[in-house]
Length: 159
Image 1 (cartoon, rainbow, N blue to C red):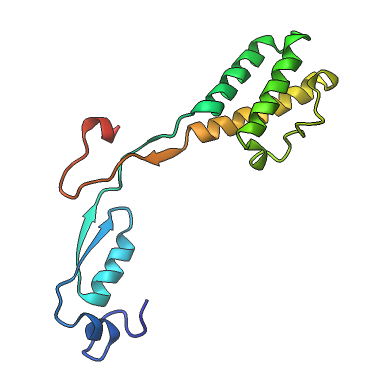
Image 2 (cartoon, rainbow, N blue to C red):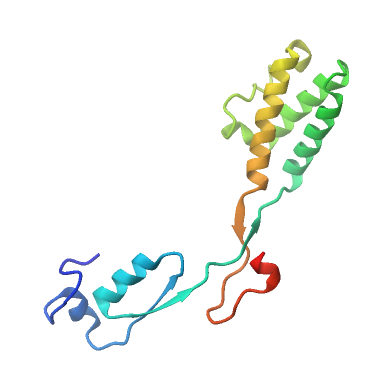
């Protein structure tokens, strides 16, 4: 922001001195009306509101998709003392490969963890934390493209 008054500018105020007689049009997202109002007051701009770009769920890819499948397998085989711990070892290994250790500080160290020596409750806790992180990543909203001023979103984008 520039020094000076917010409204009722004179020819000596910075906005008037900087913009002089140039026309000023500001494009602002419809979800940010306060910033557009300030711009209009400070520089006599004409504000044009536009919609925010459509968003979609981020989804999963590569290792994260594999990790979700491993967790599904574990849910079905957790009672199996031979397969359950092996799947947990795979989950921990894949989580480290996907760099989830940065998001899950409780993730056991890859080199020293052996699921067969761990309790079933602790294995469930580890898998639960990895699953929660996977769900958070999968449900993130990402913008898909840009909104064109004056063109309404398609029915598919609006959903």
